[in-house]
Image (cartoon, rainbow, N blue to C red; front, side, top):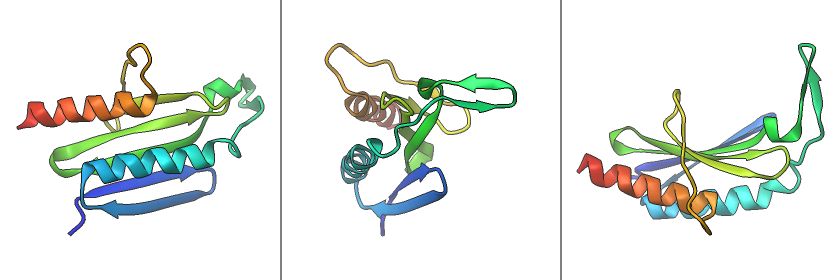
Length: 118
């Protein structure tokens, strides 16, 4: 029975896949977001009498959910930059270390969170 759910959200679409292991889910997250990030680049938009630059817009969001309330993911901004986070409703940004990608930072943070739960 799959234990981890990968959800990818982008304008007008939500996709879900299930995986047996956390490693499989995180690898699929990186692959999926890398493949979708280029076509999702955005220009500045205006809404509610305010301008939103590409870096202010979340073009794609990939989230992994698992046992014990595990939630974390990566946001791809409209300019192509990425940011990892933990949590769902109250997201906490994962600080990247020097030379680390957002995906590597998420993998490290999720591993640390799992160790703390055990």
